[in-house]
Amino acid sequence: MPSAFQQSVIDEFRANAGEVGGPFAGSDLLLLTTTGARTGQPHTTPLGHVRDGDRLLVVGSNLGAPHHPDWYHNLLAHPTVQVELGDEGFQTVAVPAEGPRRDELFARVVAEAPGYAEYQAATDRALPVVVLELPDPQAPALEVTSLADKLTEVHTWLRGQLAQVHTETEAHFAARAAHRGAGAPPPPGLGLRIRQRCLAFCQALEFHHTSEDGHMFPAMEGYHPHLRHVFDRLRDEHRTIAAVQSALAELLAGVAIAEPDRFRGELSRMTEQLTAHLDYEEAEILPLLAGVPWPPRP
Image 1 (cartoon, rainbow, N blue to C red):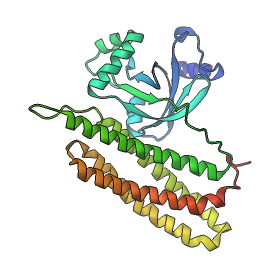
Image 2: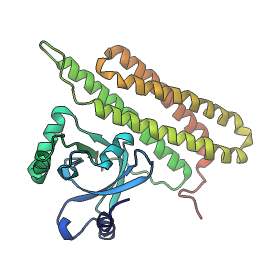
Image 3: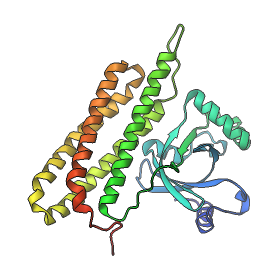
Image 4: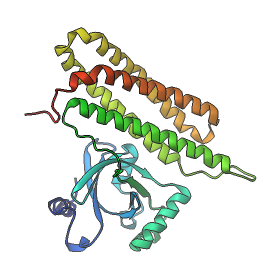
């Protein structure tokens, strides 16, 4: 739980569209809600941030203490986080920067908030810099009024994360290919980015399928018993997809030493399986959910 002081800041932030007084008056604050690494419970922390184009940068300073803050350990275990900025909130994947990119972004932070240099000088650990991408203002907003809309929203997010994994693995291979000269190529600083994307995708897909198997499908079968074969197929695919998820995580863990063409082939095969499952579910299930209101009515 937040301390009494932290909770007072959180309450004031939410009551005044992000404006707070006292020692944080005039500061650029956000609220970061992570999922506890051990407890699985939500934890909200007020944090300073620096805006850098279409992303927000937060630093795991812990006031220069020798250990990373709890919220940082939480986002490594559960990369999908909730951000409150002013009077708006959004979900994003928290991605710590690595190597030269971390150093570049930390310099960007220090240029705007010099106090972080003092926190860095007080500890031997490199203060983590975490990137929180802002929502794309050009992305069409989906109005969610039915359970069909909600399912579409979830599937769109999952497809987006898969696309990001492809983009960042290609960037990884491009950085390796660009290396010239003797010795091993320097790490391109994409390992954590790929890991966080993959973990966010796998956790979201597992939660989605568990919810469907445990709640949505049994309820729908009661109304549509003639479609039992559809639900049986989807459950079977859930078990197959679970194995694909594990193979995907294992594949991405070895990206640093992978042979690019073989890696691309495996990643494409897994992506085809995952997207085929989403496509089939949408074709069979969305028409049945179009009249079900979301959020559920009391």
